[in-house]
Length: 263
Image (cartoon, one colour):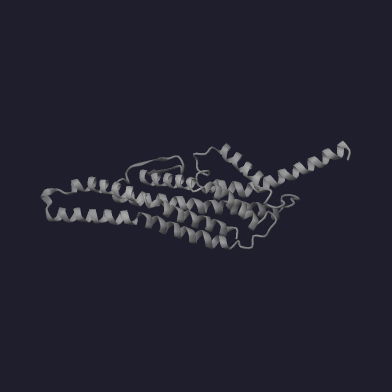
């Protein structure tokens, strides 16, 4: 093989690698854009792009050969949209697990009187309560401690084994069923996580309400808020001992729901 032919062959191989990485980056970028931790505003866009390209280069070997593009035709547009939708849907499933923990924190804050304590959450880009933000951070640490970031990469690689770049998305209707189902499950989990503390604080508030009606001269309302806050913090500390198995359960269900998107 002469040098000219060798250069041409090497150039074609390089273009094939670039094409595979770019096609793989569509689903990978959609996943990282919607995924927790990486997809938050706390991570700069340049870091997200670098992570997307690095993961795409590593996973392109299992993604299958990229589709042949002859131009900006409707088939190519649909393939691009399909890849982005699959990635965003999988990342959204994992994000819902974190939002379930934040919901539990907001419900607990309503009973303890800490709902007025808000701050700008740099990760979600919204004004959130202190307790809800604390739960979100706790879920983030547990996610990393349980190697959830490695599970994220495994989830992405498994989606390409189920639906390669040139494969057919035969279970596309599963997206419309799995997302609402896990959304309802995440809401139920958030309420169940906060329910023991909410019921205990409800009993405390009812007790002080009865005391205020039975003996108004004692003015028990002044003691109601400090007592609710103190009891709420004690119950919150007790809840932390049971947070790990609950978080592990919701993370496992989130990964299962995200894997069902690709079939």
